[in-house]
Amino acid sequence: MIFMKDISLCIMTRELCHELYKGWENDPAIYTDTDLFVPYRYNEKSVNRYFDSKQDSSRILFAIMKNDKPIGEIQLKQINYDSKECTLSIHMQNDGVKGHGYGTRAERLVLQYAFDVLGMKVVNADTVIKNTRSQHVLEKVGFRYMREEGGFKYYRYVR
Ligand SMILES: CC(C)(COP(=O)(O)OP(=O)(O)OC[C@H]1O[C@@H](n2cnc3c(N)ncnc32)[C@H](O)[C@@H]1OP(=O)(O)O)[C@@H](O)C(=O)NCCC(=O)NCCS
Image 1 (tube, rainbow, N blue to C red):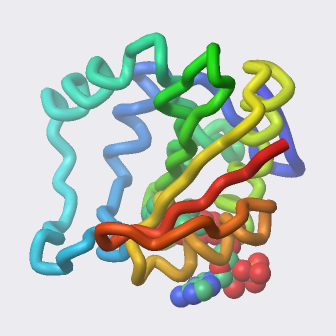
Image 2 (cartoon, rainbow, N blue to C red; image 1 turned 90 degrees about the horizontal axis):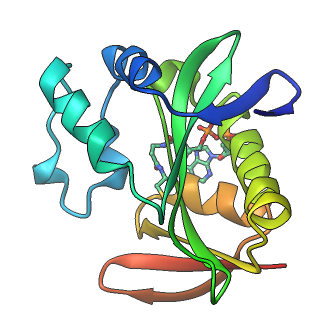
């Protein structure tokens, strides 16, 4: 587990995943086509399938924890130990925990983990073009904007 102020990251467990998704809200900002947005409804089987689908050796899924409760998830995926590159993605649980600085702190923590624990040299990220909040946070923690392609903006953090 790694800490920053009141936020910590711990490896996601099945139990934490259920707790997280019981309070989950989908965010329209992550859809390229807003018509694809549907409100989230908790379903035990779907969460089990989701959790199982994230258990592969090229990915680490963390729960973002505050006061012993999961308030979001952040993952390092496409981890390549040869090229020392991976990709970050993040989603906070619901609007109640957005805009309090937790996402920024979680990104800083996961970058620390990627570089200091996994020995990565590059972390990539991407967002849909309209997701200016995510772009702002990526740039605030040190990502550099690279390019726009296929409805997405691509970012890169090189240590
Ligand atoms: C993007 C996300 C992870 C950020 O986490 P967060 O906890 O809400 O963010 P923080 O509170 O740490 O920081 C938000 C920053 O964005 C700024 N911001 C808020 N709305 C904004 C907008 N529409 N455009 C640009 N900046 C915005 C805030 O002012 C703040 O910046 P500041 O600290 O310099 O004032 C979170 O909002 C989220 O989960 N969104 C839905 C999923 C998502 O977009 N994931 C990213 C896909 S790559």
